[in-house]
Image (cartoon, one colour):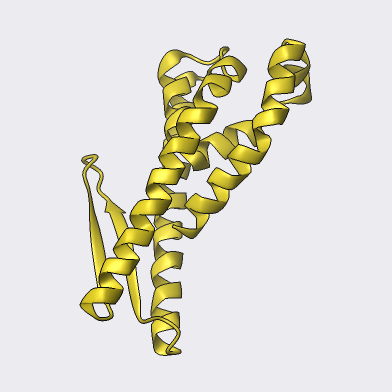
Length: 151
């Protein structure tokens, strides 16, 4: 398969998946607001140019500050966990070009998909030390994924 084509297909899938996640998240917020379960929410919006901003909706100023603090705490914890797992990702995905390795390590969602698509054959080629470290890091990765799913 042509690398350019597969990269384009992955980018298209990423974009569609991201659009669906945004739509689902906003629909869930709207549904919660209609049901009276949502007082306040803080959301980080990421733009195609790489910038981002936080939007806080609803609630009192105190509730808004609390929602913002909760979002920032989750983001900070996610960054710390990503830095902890980055060395093992570099070892596991050493077969990838550097730019692709960086993309995998920069996104918890990409990391999860990349790990889930590793073949048993590739896992078998990893040095025993790396396989052991990957197993040790699995709880950290799962914690990271749970944080980023809720954010």
